[in-house]
Image (cartoon, rainbow, N blue to C red; front, side, top):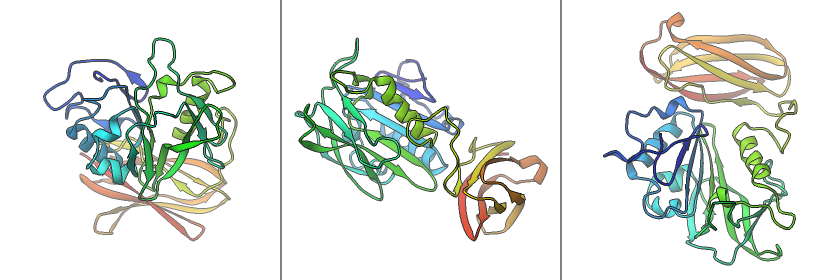
Length: 301
């Protein structure tokens, strides 16, 4: 389920001919995937269609996570809401030709200390363009382009945009071209940073037990759903928490959980049949310690 230029969905890649609506037709239910990776390498003409961009904005509206890596794709999105609103950026320069490396932004939870060389991996060409960005709408830079010595900065190489509803991470170069030379990190180490961002794991301690340090309500999965979905949330300290479901008119449809919970992560099943839901849009609301978070849910009966 992908295309020339390679789209990876939930880390699976295949190739097929484009259909009339673009490489991903409307029969693809993106909401089945908690994360989508959109990788187009050096493809400069058909990295994404307007139809696909619309599909991705709908996917993000319902709590998706999106990672984009491309030498040209942000240029192709010029004028689309996916670029400015969801990815949170403006394209600054089409090609940072002098840049050979990227350095992580200090104090970023996942890319602090990153030292990346974009030199072309085995059987992967050197990136033919490296775009720089200007963060917008609340996004922040996570990587900056530098020269080989690291002394000159050539602009923002990667941006993350994290909202209560969706999360996006965009690289202005093909991540497949990362190569270890002269002390720069390997592609596997760099990919671990991305994996940790996807899984909200700080630093590189993917396999370590991470104590939660934030009040958080995850997007439900799957979403949309037609029977059951799972709601994940975390509390930094033990306390009383409630998880309730409301319709778009603000009427409470169900109480999913109400009680004492220890600090840490917890999962609650939203069983639509058990609570007699009708098809429609709902909001899951987490309340604990005087704070409230909401996430959207779409039930298709």
